[in-house]
Image 1 (cartoon, one colour):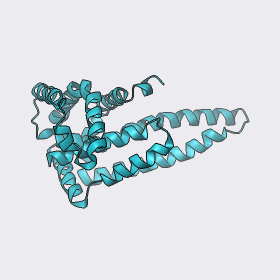
Image 2 (cartoon, rainbow, N blue to C red):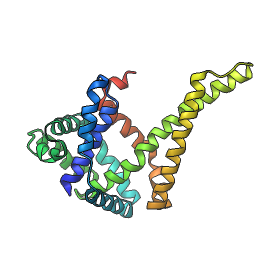
Image 3 (cartoon, helix red, strand yellow):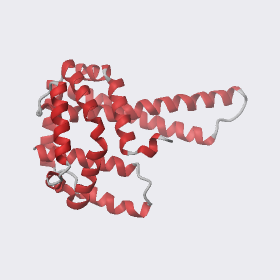
Image 4 (spheres, one colour):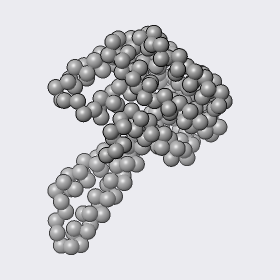
Length: 230
């Protein structure tokens, strides 16, 4: 189970990185096929769902605050973790967990995790559950928050154009409509999450949206430093 979770987490990192990649388009189909081949089976997904459900059931404010401490301590290892995951995935695909276990750099990760666990007060068994439930909720929420800010700026430009007796820009109109559809999907997914894990879980997660947003952005900046400069 531990190897399955490690593989799925690493695959998600690889997928996210490739979506943001500046590589030529003709190199992406092969990468996409490899990701598709690595997709978990139904049986594996059932195990993952069980982990997420346990994470939601056991979630407390104390654990969530401790997980922020853990994630903050592990942040300096983000780039190393990504390099290990990318290398293992390239060599072994879905069996990347075994490949990563042979990587000598894992000792650095293990020591960092040991220190992070000690500082946060969490147990090793807490990490997969907390990681999966927070990732499922916060990842789309952070994207939605960024989209909402951009949408507000577009709305302002469109309103100013109308007030001046002009037609809003075609690009603003097109992006406004597509972003609205995306935000509607995010809202629907959030509602499904609430129905599945409970209103109290969502309210608790929302309470700590700011520190998790900061962590996610810092993590992506560590993996994709060029994005930070743009």
